[in-house]
Each structure stands twice: as structure tokens, then as C-alpha cells.
Length: 375
Image (cartoon, rainbow, N blue to C red; front, top):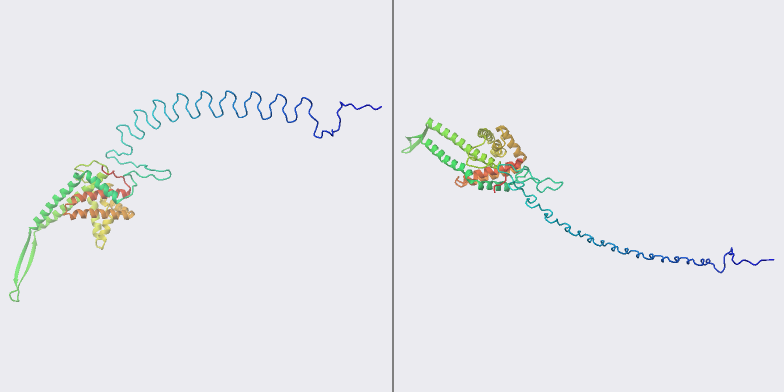
């Protein structure tokens, strides 16, 4: 006898009436649906904030908590950012009673200033990284300029005209005395005239014989030697005064009357004269000697060189700086010629002016320091 099938026993084979699977057990959620009491997928649990929203009592994202300052704002009682506290100086400003940054204390010299009689130090004005610094005014290394040298000479002359023209005034007085002695010596010259009668009628022929007193000749030679020494003395005094000005020394009446290293200068002048005399047998020998030896006397005074060393120094400087040396020689000559054309009186001004120009030009050419222009 065959028993009927038990309906509670699931069939082992698929149900042809439910090809996509059987339904869930009663009480279970459908596939893809949350369990009872659970939020829908993508929704927050009950009592929780929406996604992207802060919890209750919390500030919005990007907003400060209650009682906190806004972002970028100082806390209550604190100064604004970039502002000092009360009683404190502004940023970049010194405290009360202190000098401004870069300003010296009272009684201290300004930065870069030169004390009286001092030599200006080399500066670093305008130096950019990787580039050489520009020298301070008057410092070694400043290139030569005709305009700067003449402007410097004129400013120094205007600042101290009295001591600078004093040698010229004395030279003028000495010159008058010199020519008076020359005329006085000339009066000792005796002239004898002898008349003879020619053999052709009444025609008279005459001739003169001149005799010079030995004492008068010796006197004239002595006057010339003394005159040359006096002329050299005052020229060296004027050039020495110009060197003192370039050194930044105080200027008084003796500055242009007392020469520096006079007898070494006399030796240098004698050597220069001998060289010029030998070269004068050539057409342009004198000009060549004047060019290459133009700084010999100045080097003897300014650099304390011996006569032979000073001549060699002048030759090297002019050889290495031909253009600048030519300009210097032309300006010095032209200044003195203009002074001489003014009846010689102009030399009272032109002589110290030319000496100042030559000293400044020489120190610029050789790279030596020089005092700043007079105010």
C-alpha cells in the first residue's frame, strides 16, 4: 500500500512555479529591504543627524564653537593680527626714546661720514649679490673723470681761496723784484762807439764794441739762479698744498707756503730738466718728456719717492694710462695758459687750481684715496 506524500517535507527539486527562488520565511524582510526597526539603506539611524550634518549642539562645519572667535580673528582682549599690544611700538619702529633704525645715536657720526682729516673708507653702496660693490666717493677704485676732477678742484678752491692765492701774490712781488734786479744789472753794461771815415767820399761808417763788467755778469747769473729756486720753491709749495687738501688735512696760511720734501723735489726737477734737454734735440722730444714725466714731482711729494723712483713711477703710470694722462696734461697746460694770458695775474688763481686738478687726477688714475669735495 502506497502512503501519500508528506506536504511538510520540502521537495528536493525546484519548484516549477517559482523559478526565481522561494519567498522568504514569514517574518523575514524581503531581499534588499532592511529588517524591521532598521533605517532604510542610506538613511541615518533614529536620533542620528543626517549625513554631512553636525550632531545636535555642535557648530556647522567650518564654523567655530560657541564662545570661540571667528577664524582669522584674535581672541577677545587680544590685539588684531599685525598690531602690537598696547604700549608697544609699531612693528619696524624703535621703542620710545630710541633712535630710528639706521640713525646714529646723538653725538655719533652719520653712517659713511668721514671725520675731519680722515680718509673715507671703501663702501659697499648698491652692491647686488654676485656683483662687485661700487666704491664710495673718494675711495680707491673710482675711475678718473675730467669733470669730476675739475669740479673737485674748484670746490676746494672756493672753500679756501685765501691760503691758495697767497703764494701767487708773493710770486708776483718776487717777480717784480727779479726784473728790477735784472734791469739794475743791465746798467753795468758799457757800450763804446768808434766812428771811422770811409774812403768813398763823405760816407761815415761806425761800429760798436760792448764790454760787460765781470761783477755785473756774476750778479746776473746769481739773480737768475735765485729766481729759478724761488720759482721752484713756490711751485712745490702750491703742489704740496694740493696734496694736503687731497689728504683731508685742515688748510691754513702755511699749507700752500711750506713745501713737502723740497730738496728731493729739487733733485727730481734736475733729472727731469736733464732728460728734457737731451730729448729736446728731437723735434718732439720736449713734448715726449713733458708727457711721460708729468707726475714725477708729484710722486716725489705725494708718495715720498726718491727722484729716480719717482721718474720711473711717472713713466709707468703714463704708459699704462695713456688716454687719462693726455687729458690730465692738456687740462693742466690749458689752465695755466689761460692764467698767463690774463697779464700773468690770472696765474694767482690758475696755478693752485691746476695743481688741485693734477693731484686729484693722479690719485684717481692710480687708484689712491682722495678727500671728498668741499661743501
